Image 1 (tube, rainbow, N blue to C red):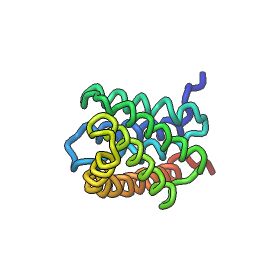
Image 2 (cartoon, one colour):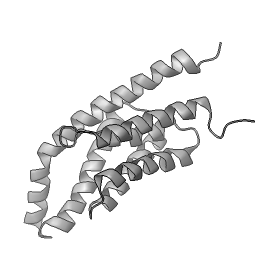
Image 3 (cartoon, one colour):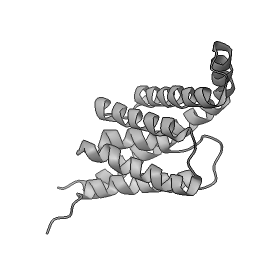
Length: 164
């Protein structure tokens, strides 16, 4: 009897689960693997429904520990868009990581502006200006974790998933 998931998909799911666990552990502010996890899933899952279902489930499970907030809707929306960037581009590179990071920053901080700042031009500018230090941290996390996931998966694929 065949498994529901192939060996490749099990490895991808394992990477996603590790990323979700790392999200729950103590870390520097905004240096998390969530953008990398969404991009990675979009690029590597051959069955694209899993590119969205598995990472969203991992996010949801980690949020059970971290808690939900009014901003969660925007985080999940940005997460889905980043997954789509991975599906559409079919690659993890500097361009797709940067596009994913910027998209996540713009969408989530739009939610912060709507919920936590005056809905004026000054409130908008203040919100995004105050978010810039967090964006720097997000970029660091996105590039580091994307590299780890990309090269880690390539290593595991070459070593254990290739057939002769």
